[in-house]
Length: 460
Image (cartoon, rainbow, N blue to C red; front, side):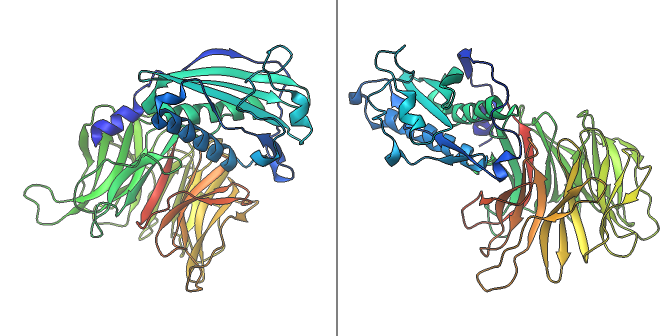
């Protein structure tokens, strides 16, 4: 299993063979899709090979097409034009326009059905090598925005598709999409009485188990470079009578696992510093939990919070510019606080609700997502980093009519989405929402439970 995961993280040799684009600035302004989505035409991919090569090669094209379609649908920028509305038989026209290409398509055929953008793509497979040739056009101006070829092993078909989707958003909005990112979460997939740590693609595909403690493993966190995962597990150490909530560090590139914090009591809630050299975590040591900072080998650097007496300071999260957010009950009820990375300048930023927890910084540090309890359930909220401008992202009921709980938010690497868990189906499944709450989608679609998912940066 570990070898399979490492293979996913290795550089597949995916690279553009050529790239060209015409200048024209940003085609879609960020936030514009709230009022009007762009009409996108995405014909089926052409296969540059013999039909006699069998259905296996054809299925690769279907996988690439479906992956791109899902990526660009989730982006919330596009409305897809039904293929039944196409005026051309795209299986008989080339990927480039007439009259420059003798068998090229006609821009008039796409402007007539209102397309804003057109993607034409085809692929070939020689041995185990896949080549995807792509073109992104702006139909109203009849011009090429970007053209690229991607090459890699057939096993990297989904990754090539995600790479292309990222490139489409980059070309149209100036900002790369989150489609090469991964998610780490705790789950009961390995057995109902246990929880282990799993890694998956952002869309729930390529699920891999990275812990096998046959115990309760929780609260995973990514290192900034995507090469390490810290998590807490109730592992029974040799000679110990009881299981302790110890923190471990797993290196995805080497497969090495190390025990980094095993003080008696709680060692949980890992959050890596932006420089990838330290971890913030909650340690109790028989007292009320406080937040500490330590090196990756487990050496404590300092105590970041200090009470007040009897108060719990937990769930640290660090912004990319080094600011701390955490939850604390120092004022009576658990609320969200911010501070400098050294624990100074503590500021309470939530005041409503019964219980506020699990803060998460947006990549640019301008927003914080958190889970807030009202009545008997939690919902996901997003606010500005100073506590203003709060909006609710979730509101859903379970099949029995009771309100569902939505917890453990995590921002996407581009800051446009928030991921969280919800028990609205009866199981704790993973969902994502646009940061403004206008669109929501389910990520996992199985019968297991997931806890505290964390979204990585794009992993190249």
